[in-house]
Amino acid sequence: MPSASSALPRTFRLVAGCAVLGLTLALSACGSDSDKPSTDGPQKVTMWMMKDSVTKEYLDRFKKDFAATHKDVTLDVQIQEWDGIGEKVTAALASNDAPDVIEVGNTQVAQYAASGGVKDLSGKKSDLKGDDWLPGLAEPGNIDGKQFGIPWYAANRVVIYNKDHFEKAGITAPPKTRDEWITITKKLNTGKNQGIYLPGQTWYTLAGFIWDEGGDLAVKDGKNYKGALDTPEALQGMAFYQQLQALGKGPKDSDEAKPNLADVVSKGDVSQYIAVPGNVKLVEEANPALKGKFGFFPVPGKTADKPGASFTGGSDLIIPEASKHQDAAYEVIKAFTGEKWQTDMAKTMSYVPNKTSFAKALDGDAGGAAMALAAANGRATPNSPEWAAVEATNPIKGYMTAVLTGKDMATEAKKASDSITKTLTK
Image: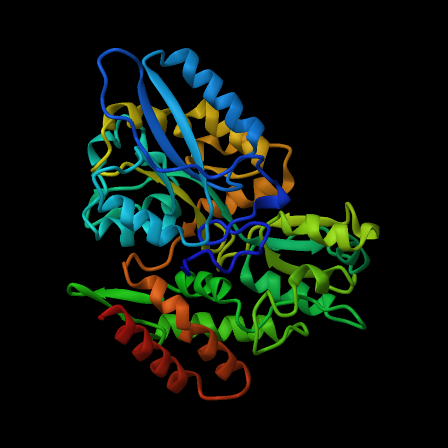
């Protein structure tokens, strides 16, 4: 099922089709049975965790520590494949035999909550110190004022730059504002080098520019959502994207997958590109001569006081209403989302922790630190159960190509907005 982070590179897909940083888990998927409550032994808490979300070593450390501190609970982690997970979770939530904890993509929470099968955890927010959660993780988990999804981890795109290109161009520091960014990108866009490689359909990047202008992809309209690409704010965001995209050779009619982003960058003539930091590993594998050549900075904002808005992908944890061990399930969530295991996860996986106060765990990790800075101004796609259907046909991509190939921006924005509205009001 398409979801809001399906556009992340194949090594760092966080919501629908995940393969994080090339890591693999030697764990197999299990069944979904959950033990009935028992008075003569520990409760068995079943958790569905997505394949490649964490390393086996991290999970083993967590389970050992949890067993030592929770003698009355046995944790059974069952690894699930991303393919078909939407239908499987939906069926589990409607059953009387659901797992006790489920990892879900942050932008999937609205879809699952709409089924009525997810427990409202609003009363736990204070205990979990939720006021410090990253907005891009917390907001998608909050439906109509109720917190169904508890933020677990995040990742977002940053600007990745070739340090040699910057040095040769006399650029001594990354830009802090959009205007500075345009200036240095023009300076880098000389000879055979592309100032920036930005495919025309990189719509998550466009979303950030729209958010910075005060606009959105869609907005609440009564009980439904309506497309908002034709608002003045959204049009300003598209105009900036058009200006930036022209400073490179990115195709106007495709996204990061065609051609493969890492393959393009590995040729050595790209000065900047936008991706999750883990993409650098693929570039270096394709061209070892580029190893150690890249730096990272957040997408610049309109002013220097904060980075630009960026889409935050990641995972939340939910408890099904049908869970037979809800109190014990909450203890699992509390442990996973607390400082000890958030810090361990950040250091192990280079993920952004779920709280801004935990960002120090990424000190010394240049890519992770840049992600953490950007995550402080993170956002998510519209919180509609129908948003996945928008991505399935994705009129935003077609709109972007139309504008970049010379069609009237306002006219095309209205067409795309109408398409989004129609889908979200089904």
